[in-house]
Image (cartoon, rainbow, N blue to C red):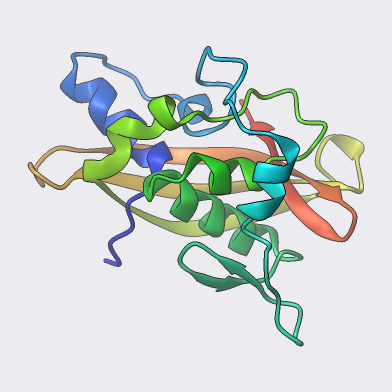
Length: 175
């Protein structure tokens, strides 16, 4: 298992440790925090963008290596890397500009410092909801508490992505 400290997985572990009994895919996406303003400006977001540098082959630098922004599975993986780092600005950089979801805040991801996650078994449904610029990515997500590895949460997750230019961006958690 490759250790990645991302915010989405941590939400599930922290919630279960606090006595909550369920983990919703929406907990791992923008919109799960009630704060409407993350305090960053558009200039801050551009400066901290997960897409700040790219290679000749179209790969873009994320928080945990290079990824292909035209591959929805790689975008979801890079998004989770940012969540569990936790880096709210980098995670927000993966969110589509027109997404109905709220953006992450530093405080909203604070509890994800002690989480590991693993994702696998990806399925991609193209033309999701009869939209050629939308896909549904479904995958298995396992979240482990670093301090107590016996505490694991997760399950099947589904995330809708939509095109923004040539790149896939996170739209929202899907039911």
